[in-house]
Amino acid sequence: MIVAFTLPAMGHVKPMMPLLSGLVGRGQKVVCFGHTTFEHTIRSTGADFSPYPDIDYDFDAPDFNLVKMAADLMHASQTIHSRLLPEIAALAPRLILQDFMALWASRIGTALAIPRIHTIPTLVFNAATQRQMRKEDGVVKLAGDVLRATPALIREKISSRFAVSVREAFGVERSWRNLAPPLCELVFCIEALQVGDPRGDVPRHYIGPTFAERRATRPLASKGYALITFGTLSNNETGRFEAAIRGAFLTGYSVVAQCGAKVDRRHLERVATSLETAHPGQTATILDSVPDLEHLIEGAGVVIHHAGMATTWETVRHCKPALFIPTIADQKVLASQLERDGFGVRLPPGRACDPGAIALALESVRTRDYPWAKIQQLLAQAGGAPAGVKIILDALEASR
Image (cartoon, rainbow, N blue to C red):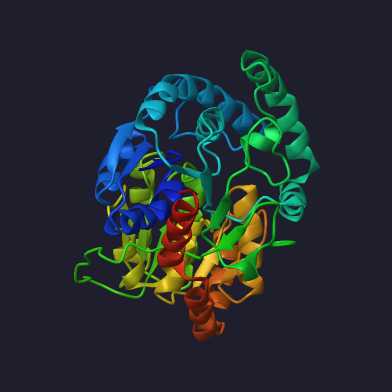
């Protein structure tokens, strides 16, 4: 049996699901723990679903202050670890498959001496990546983050009796002191995009993106629009969506904006109506959330997004030009790497709410040549979900 632990965010859950499907398809019994929001997604793989216990944390509104995030992970792990430890012991799995930030899984695996494999749905946070992230955030933000979040971090470290370090909470390489290291890491990215040394202190496999091959698609009513999406966690700024919509209209695009439920949708709908009146022939559709974002990507002429890994790879899969407007530090680093290698264009920092800057960047996106054949070759070499499933099965066989 394999027990899987997800992190409650679509960008973390989604790329793990093809691995679960592949393992179930190869006859493995898989029990996956997750937030109830993702129960249907998890069960659709054929894995059994078990819910996490309730914790005092709003996963729909995470704090992107990395110091506070470490405190939140420690806080969540205290509850989840103590509640699930007896249940996992009774299941007696041969292997734990976990998101690299699922700290509770690392603690449970260490306590029960169960080997673990980590999945990483972003760039690896090695020393070079961390330096670049700090540079992207800047001294003022970093100082503010430390001042604001250090008291919470100290409280959680004392509460947990210093069970783990901040670096262990994020699964950072060469940080394993209190926790056992994983057997290996599966990175849902290609090695060419990694900042710094791609190798680590445990075996690291850049398997690239994983796709759900059995998804159903519907005929598209229209094509060639600008699709705007900023993910499920960082899509809480109405002004970013408004600027992107206005910028796309200035460039002549119709718009489909997938905004989620954390913005002022009525305001965006008023903006859309005003723009449609001022630009006959162009349309703007404002959506809350959709079960099949890939369907919208297929019909787009360009995708404006936050450089989240899941959206990035679905956009690449369909060879769609992209404008990156990243929100948090690792997305900013990835956006720069993607622009460097010809995957799209990054909006200059500080211009996320500037429609004119967005329109100018979209002109660059539209006229750029994209090395799609080279990119698809890199993805094929990485191997995707089949490569990840093989690595997991090989680890199971070696543990017999």
